[in-house]
Image (cartoon, rainbow over all chains, first blue to last red; front, side, top):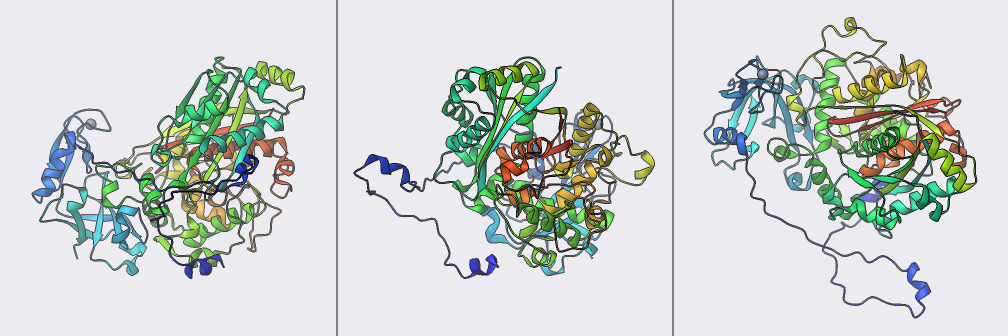
Length: 178
Length: 436
Ligand SMILES: [Zn+2]
């Protein structure tokens, strides 16, 4: 199969070659048959990104506290915080989430976006908390990727926090509680 | 609103890369095909087309803002009205519906919908990063943003909730790849087995590389017209058109973060009752509420009471084998929870193709007879329009003319549904096409 052929191929890299000259035909009619010129072009940016009204969540993580929001009007709980209620539109208050949740679902990523490729395999998890219908997306640590099975669903998990906060949602991760 | 018809379509074959063409030329090739198919010369087309809608998903992939106008300009259709739409993976489906509205409203008699994507301009893993940026960059993307991972979590919950099996998902891949084997427009034409799918490298458990569609460069166009527009086109080209009616459109949405989707009651279709789903928390993350809403609205508009009886085939957004199974349920081809068994029994397979698998109820309602995104490719902005073109050819019964063989022609195709879906079920469109 094709896969095997791919497996023995030399790795393709993106360095490319600086190109100063290209061949050019005498007869302009031949131009349409020439190969396209493909060049490497870099694009990079630093953003000055504000978490805005969601900032207290990240301040919470930096202090080892997991925060969600509760609607002041209807009581709906947003485990991943929203300042305004997705059910009724009312303004929410910050609240501390329970110290224990359960695995709602999970996966093991063996590949990933370029930014996370070096961290593979890693586990993503959606965590549920008693009394709330919404969930929290996070990393699950301490579970062997090879032990992935439906039986992990419903297992109790606890939040853990990075000591040196990076002010990213990965300041938080979960481990099995039992 | 007045009746709207699709009158022609074209596709620039989806491929891993088209370095020999810029995106303008990719669209131009599909456009030229659509014009030639109805015997229309460029000059005449420019006279008759009232305006356009442009579809492409990612400014990151193009690294060119306002690429839409550059295509319109290349097609020679300035200074006519035009705009670009964007809605993730559903961009093409949204584009089709905006062109529909332009005609239905009476603003235009003839409207061109065109879409493209150039995903080959970055490597696959950077491409996955761009796609993952279509998830909340405060809370979701930085955790390990990866769309296959997101869909894997959804299907793991589907497996838990309903007992769906990985082998059932693999059957979707087998079906769509083998269908595509007979489609010259397909990017991947492979005869696969369930074992091939399961032995393929794991991408995000339980989805393997053959459970996931590939990235592509490609373009597609759909030409829509009113009855007056058809008269104008026939006069300009001197040929009799074979229009297909667009009889229903529907669209639905859901929260960007899967984590936010509240658990409530199922949105019911006419052939379902509340008793079917007494203990189901909906949509959870196992189902696509946006897909159900889009379906409900489109079926209502087209007068569809029971899709299995009233629809002859479906072209749906199978970016993942799992999402095809979930979509059978959203579209009411079977009840929620029965998607795995639905494919296992053979319902969505073509009756006349050999898949090397025993299937009890083969061909009840062919789904993705073209091969779908899984095998045809998924150049995002073009994908929803590709589905429209395939559905149009099915109902025109012109598959043989365009594919060079009629193996994928659905017999007596009278009415079809197309379904376009943005990750992770945030925007979904369903449109109904039928014999005029
Ligand atoms: Zn509220």
